[in-house]
Amino acid sequence: MNTTRLFRPLVVLSFITFALFSCNEGLDSILPEPDLSLVEDEFEVNTVLEDLDNLTLKSLEASGLGFRTTTIANGSICSTATLNHDTAGKKITLEFGSGCTSNGITRKGKVIFTYTGSFLIPGSSVVTTFQGYEVNGLKVEGTRTITNTGINIQNFEITLAVKIQNGKVTWPDGKVSSFITDQVRKITLGSSGYQASVTGTGSGTSKTGISYTASISEPLIVTQSCVESGISIPNKGKINFSYLSFVFTVDYGTGECDKKLTITYPGGVKEMTLD
Image (spheres, helix red, strand yellow):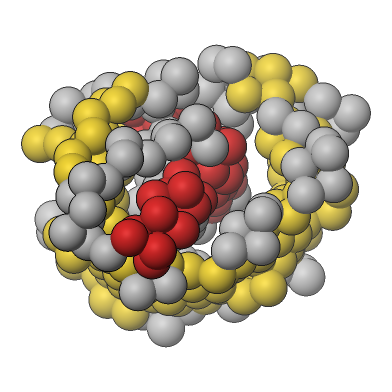
């Protein structure tokens, strides 16, 4: 469920050198290849938020609030994680304690889901907050609200409005990324897990202080099997990032479960594979 936030500035930061050069020389000059070394930092934020979508779905299902009943006591999340469901208070707390690792992802702290009712009912919502929550050393803050705007039980499909307010990720060195997002996610459940088709917009400030906006130009496709295998970027789709007067596009491919993407920027195209 992407939960997400998929609107991190994967490429915007990498074009600082390019942007300064083009402002001084003009677009008719020979443009240098952008420095893409910072893409890895922003990819970490995507990993955090895609992982959150998976945690949300599993926590709801384990609490009897989803299409099916599952358990969190498996390696796809963390074998030592605990789930407390306060039915009277309509609150679910997923706790990782001082830290546990699964599929290369180390989580600690708490994720708290407060819900209005069964998530199968249109109009119901889940608000996610955090207490000391970290993923691979990144501290996560903010409020994420998911609202059921439509459901097709026959086809196991659900449409969600997903908003993040006051989103904040802090790196171990104290640098901070802040962001807001406004998305629509169509979730389809199948025998091999869920698939999410995501559209929407976002904006924020990178950890180096660069402001940006983002818009999904072709729906992003995210699958549960890829997320749980440690590949937390979309399998397919495109995002346009705007920074200053420039627009850069990230293309996630045609459906393969990998870490390859193509970046198109004024003056060139760059293919890369995220570590």
